[in-house]
Length: 127
Image (tube, rainbow, N blue to C red; front, side, top):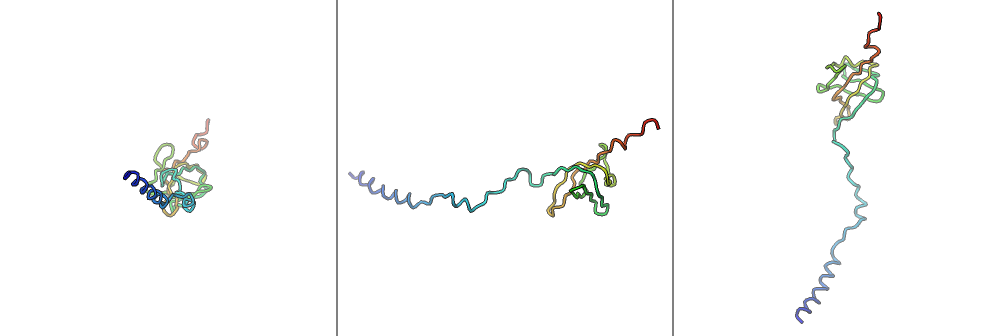
């Protein structure tokens, strides 16, 4: 009998405790935007390729049709598989490589490959 009385007294207490417990609501989640998905490393290298349309030797930058890229002391420049210098990047040449955005949004080249024009590089036959 004592056991039955304890069960009867505990059952309403359990019901009150469950009713007072806060339940998670999907409405609460609607007010919080999901965290943006990061698809790669934060400062991943961005590839580029294009024809050089302008060169600024004072600022150590060159521009393709849609990008302006700066050369830094850490930039590796190659031409024909050999080390090259900024002066090898000239208007009309084709360049490929990779760059990274700095905190100001400026594109700094990590690597630049100056593509040689095979028509200009080959000596004229028979002359």
